[in-house]
Image: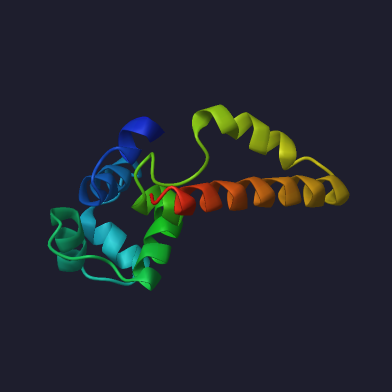
Length: 121
């Protein structure tokens, strides 16, 4: 299977087809697994149609990925690579320290937003 980064840089139709093939599923097999039709999977993979939220959820479950991995490009969601380790460390904090870290981050975010508004961005 292609690397996560390669997959996440593909357009949604190509990503869906690659994930389906990596799981060894035919279009019919995927359609059967999610309660859809082969023609609908064909349309999704061809870019002629977009799945509903409910269908995206079923696709993600069947393909063993999160809906974020299925839908969003690599740079559209999640922290930058240089912040991932810090956020992983924060996730292991006890509840009190998480509350403090959240308050600090909220303050930094508000300050950043205020600066952007005042500079007209």
